[in-house]
Image 1 (spheres, helix red, strand yellow):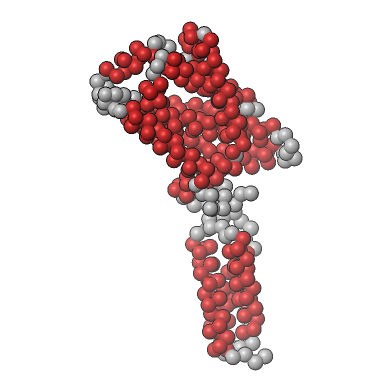
Image 2 (cartoon, rainbow, N blue to C red; image 1 turned 90 degrees about the vertical axis):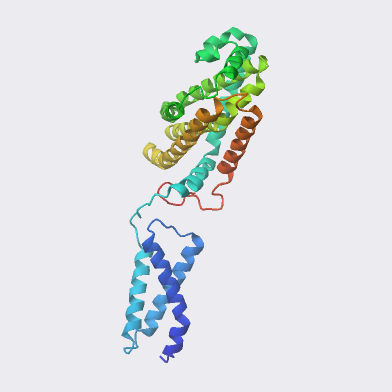
Length: 340
């Protein structure tokens, strides 16, 4: 075989270098997953390098080039036929801004059911207050909600500006712990084939509907919006997502129309459950901070219009985040593997 070796090396060197760069990336970042186009390109470069090695193997005078290609082809072969699970490197920012919203959208049907259950509860709670105002003593679990809303608003607006006296962090931590506990409970109750999750979501809706109508009937709509929106615009969707996770678990347990075994179904949803509940926890941390440092302050120290605008902005950003973040990326599970 006649071969212009110098010309051959010049023409092929760029392809070898490209393959070497790909290999270095895969070896340096074990969690990296190539998409379909990258995989095809990598396989093409491997086949080309193997062909070049076969063509140059007859040139005994070029052992360095032959040795380089042998190493390159062997490394590429190992990557192509690798069967072990690659270690996962935790990337919190990428997980939160890509994996979490992608998982939320992939399980959107469960979120829709969670929202529908809560809305039914809101209607039930509002209807109960409208038909029997005295029922709020039964419906509302907190004593400060059972009195006259107008008197509470008057009392809240007269309290001193820094009424917590440096206890913001303690109060915020208490709120975070309580809300996260309720969210974990909403997920855990999915093990009751979803019945417990449904009851919890429905009851939360009852409380929300009863409180909302009670304050609206008392002419305190602005106070209600200024009080609830800053933290509620994050807290309420977070609880709905926790309910979503519980319903995903319930669906895996029931397994209607799914030929997989129970173990396989649970394994298939386990990553999504972890992602959803950790995302909920982070959202509730923010909601707790906002409730402690902003929601509990009212006029004249804090303008209601400012609090309402802040809550609306939060809600807009949250929905944009959940429905758009990571949309241009390949969805991946908690261990970095692409998901269907």
